[in-house]
Image 1: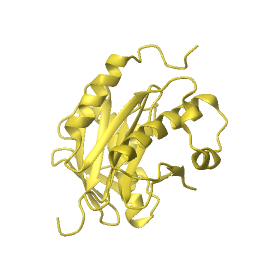
Image 2: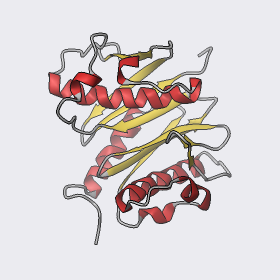
Image 3: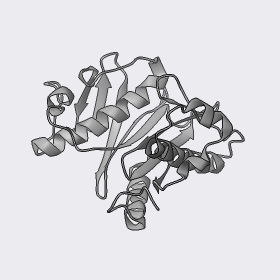
Image 4: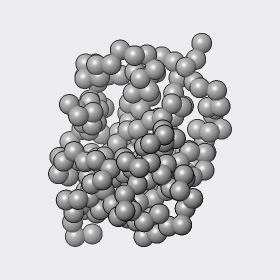
Length: 218
């Protein structure tokens, strides 16, 4: 028996993998995985202790994300494989590594880099916006680049989630949607506290948003 939703498939996984590879700037590596029943088995002891939810689908999604993270850390030749969950839900990467983990109902994705290569990174598969959420996500400061309003709302949701997760390790500030201004035409975003991120998007098999900041001096 599988928790994989109808429609999720290895083909989608391959398409997302290709999209992530195309989005990633130099120095950033990425991976994805279709969420499967029992993926919580991939937790390391330190990770399991920090992820308190007992709901099986949520634990499977988090476990799938950790499995990707472990593979990325191996590629970065990092000896410490554990990526625990912080008090605000943020992944705590080993020293010298930056990255992020995200998932929707079908797929988990993760990105990672040596902190000297990229200041902070994130990728977020977008979920359909529930009724009334678009008004919270889209603000007058956002520039939609001529996108159809419904599609723009979903993309902005993904971008703002990605930007928040990219900025949080830099200043530790909790942001709302109104604290992030996105310019889809210029492919950039800025937080209310002045942190600027470049944004890359894919709308192929999934709506994927990747936000990243370069270290000072680059």
